[in-house]
Length: 208
Image 1 (tube, rainbow, N blue to C red):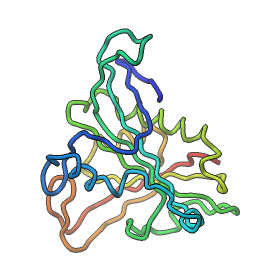
Image 2: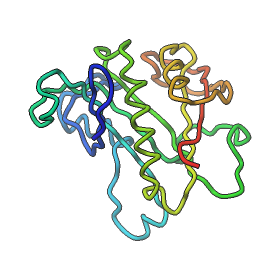
Image 3: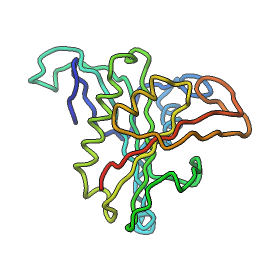
């Protein structure tokens, strides 16, 4: 668990959550609905040595706001869940981007895709920036987790109209790589149906 911010937040690894979340078909009504909605985000167990040979990386943190109380006794502090942060290694179903936008070091490296979602009650308080910075710091410290790779690069895809999120990724050290225009069959994105979207692509080294 990492504690950051004023008021303080707790950011800690998670495997599942019992907090209902919003999705395309409306807010989840049960824990089972939530688990299905998060199955592509939450870590999956390694079930065999063969699965480990093709290792995928999923780092998921739940963000809670500390609601006062005695900060010296963390077990007694009331909190409220306000968001999720996820880092996932690239998979075939993810958006394919021009490879020349990314670094070309001589040694192999891991590319993770950053995603995050915060409840409206937490917007405009700097919580996303502070918690992302804390997660990046923790991931840099956990070098053994990325074995056998030593270098880790993070990419983020942000809808151009989402000005707040663009400010967040810039504040946590990502650099703009380019503008990608996606076109295809209509999908639900950013609260609306769309068949065309301008996406701002960002990236930075997490470990090198």
